[in-house]
Length: 448
View 1 (cartoon, rainbow, N blue to C red):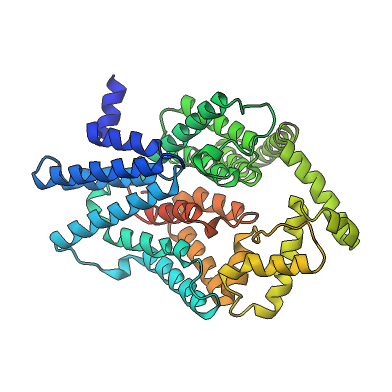
View 2: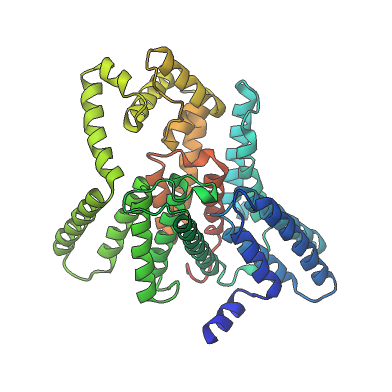
């Protein structure tokens, strides 16, 4: 009871906010419309409570900001609704409190908004005009939200937010476990359909889980805990097992790499002993992953086979296997690089990449190939937007690394994942990355 009261005070929880958290956690593809209606009704009631002085401005803003973060793993429309509500509340108080902006203090927000403008210009240049721009509108929404963001919430904001996010991943994972058990879909082999009930593919759910693991390690390095060291260690192990189970290979590799870095930082022995120990741990973890994760094992075999086929230019073999994951990725990269040689300056438009590259592959006789994007975020932006916009995107990453090194793990995790996945082509990926990018741009006691 004491711990529950501490949590209640820490996050300003009451009956209304708890009901909102519960409603959000039940936002699945089949139920999100009901959840959204309930959220709207309770929000009107919450705002009325503020107008009659039943709750404070700080309560309202902090509650809905944490709800926004909590909603990340759940159905996208619910998160979008909460983002709109947050922008409205912050705009309301910005106007009523007669606040002002000193834009030179908001470099991160301005850089991301400029990146949105570059994407908008690209979408106006390339036909079909403005196709898919609705996805990238979130690159405008988040900077606007954080420009209006009330500075009264600064106290321990980042630490609280990270803990809310970890909690949401734990709860969504628990829900998925129960649903899969009820539907008799739990097995001892890799299950890439585990997160389907949430309307999320295994790649993105792997990113959610991987990021939660990264945050636990980040808190540890900052001498903080999600709960305590023992429970945090158990949670980290569970997240690793879950990544193996759902077949999220890149997220798993990123977490393992950062886990090795964490051990290197914390173990107080001679550097060469550290190196030997950590290399052993790294090889051991890869060995365990290889033997317990069929997708990883098959992936390595496919890479070998794919390399041999492409190296020998064995078109017959490539055609026959052009439906397979590794062959598809190799074909897309090969054709994307060829396209890039001609259109490197302005690109071909983000909305055109999948169709244009896939059509060329199929027209060249790879009949079994199924359309897909580049599966490499760097190549995707370079081919879609051109050289200047791509360099600006790299600058955004560099700006974060230079100014907010305390959350280097967050950035490195995404930079590794972006090598094999185009995570910033969907709202889910954009929301997850840029929400925390801008949040960590706030200096806070936990960073100092």
